[in-house]
Image 1 (cartoon, helix red, strand yellow):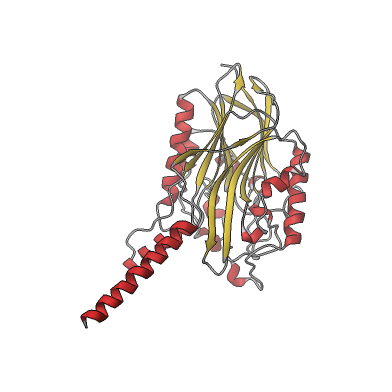
Image 2 (cartoon, rainbow, N blue to C red):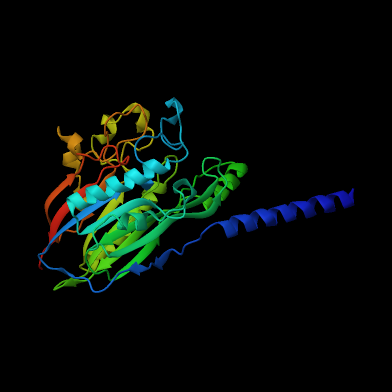
Length: 373
C-alpha cells in the first residue's frame, strides 16, 4: 500500500510540474509598468502650442468585419452560425476599409484597439504592419503595447497562438511609450476548484493594459495620449472599479504635472445617466445600473458626454454595434475620449457614415488645440 501511494504521489507531482511548465513557458508575464519600442523613420515634426490636432480612436476588432457572430459575442446562442475566426477574405477587405476611413479623416494621431500580431485566428499577421502599407508614409511614428500574448491557448475556440495589442500611430515625433498593466478579473467566494480553474484561465487570456505615449510640444508641457481597452464580461467582480481607479490615478498624475492629455479607447462601460435603462434587457446584464465610469465623468471633460448620451439625439453618439444578430443598429456608447481642461476641442463626433460594416465599434474623432497657459 505504501508503494502505491508513493507511486501515485510521484506521478501527481510530475504531472503538476509538467502542467506548471506548460503554463509558464507558453504564456507572457508583463511588468506592471514597462517601456515599449518606438518605431520612427527620419526626423518628424513636433507638436506646437495652439496647433490644431485631430485624433481618431477605434476598436478595429482585429479586422474581422461584421459578417460573423463569434463565440464570445453575447447572443451567439441565437445565431445560426457561430464563428471562431474571420475568413482571410474578410480580414483583407476590412484592412482596406479601415485604411480608407483613416485616409478620409486624415487624423494626426490614431489610437487603435484589438490589433492582432502573431495570432492563429488572423493567420499570424502583424496587422499594424499590414495597415501601414495601406496608409500614407507620414504615419511613420508608431508604438504598440500587447495585452494578449500566448503561444497556445488550450480553448477549443482558440486552439492556437494569441497576440493582440494597443497601437498608436502619429505624424508627429513620439518621446516615450509605456505599458501600464490593469487589474485582471478576479472573483470572490468561489469554491476551490473554480479558484484553480480561474487562475489557470487567467494565465492564458487577456492581460489588460493602458498604453501611455508622450509627445514633446514646442512651447509647452508634453502631450500625453492614453490608449486602452478595459475588460469585458467582468460583472460579478469588482474588476471595472479597479480598472477605472487605475486610469484615474494615471490621469490625475498627468494633470498634476501640468501635461496636456487625452484618454481614449474602448472602456466597455456605459455613461452614467439614462444609458442603462435605454439598453435592451438582453444586454443590461453586461453592465451595472450605476456605471463604474462615473468618477471619471465627474472629474474630467469627455466625449461623448452624459448630456449627449441622455439627449434626444443620443443615437448620433452610439459607438458600439454588437455582432449579436438581434441588434440591427448601433445601440450604446462604450468608447470615449476624455481630455484635460487645458485642451480646447473644436469638434468631436462618432463617425457612423460608411463604418457600420467594418467593426463592432465605430471611430471616435476629436479635433482640438493645446491652449497656451
